[in-house]
Image (tube, rainbow, N blue to C red; front, side, top):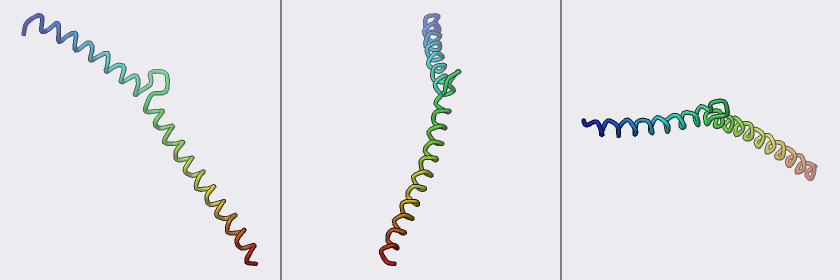
Length: 73
């Protein structure tokens, strides 16, 4: 391998390292919320949202049942 090829490989390796560090920072956060934390927050919010929707639906169904029963009594 020639000296010029080694220099070219070193430059490419340095560029790859910069990209990898940026990706690692995006995933882990480096002092700010990273993708891992942000996805976890979204999943938790979705779970809470789902429970709230089911609770509202159950409450609405209960109200509708009482309303229908009031006409039959």
